[in-house]
Amino acid sequence: MKTSETTEVKTGMSLDELQAVVDAPIWCEFALSGAPIRVECRRLGQAVDEQVRELRRRAQPPFIKERGPSGDYDYTNAAYLAAKDKNEKIARALMIYAGCPAVAAKKPGLVVPEMIYEYVRGVLSETVLEILGAVIQGGGLELGGRVNFTSTSASES
Image 1 (cartoon, rainbow, N blue to C red):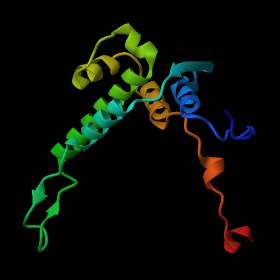
Image 2 (image 1 turned 180 degrees about the vertical axis):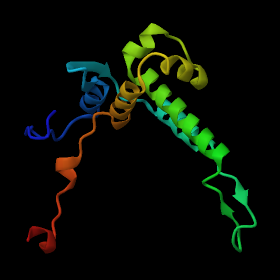
Image 3 (image 1 turned 90 degrees about the vertical axis):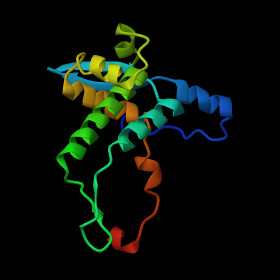
């Protein structure tokens, strides 16, 4: 949906109607070498969301007692940064595998996140993976026109 389009706001939806909207595909649209591409994706379920959150939290910076009166974490530690980066890529691969049927169809049945990462990173370019991951993570959610409903006199002038 383009942001310039106006659509009718749906009100009074039943839970089944809302679930049907949630279960409908979301589309990842981009141009690659000038050719428009449209890839079917789907929203992630809670189980995958929880796995992604756990992967992102897995890397922890080392705690250094000697820093300050009560110590501090070393967020610049090279080992921590490398582990954090790898965990982010594993989490993104898991999202893409679960949220893009075309990717999962080529090698179905993978369940171990590290194996999914090894497969997904060899399938498409980093740029395409970033685009797919962003669309799947966003879940097709568009809030822009609905959340900016307040104004102040300073912003109106």
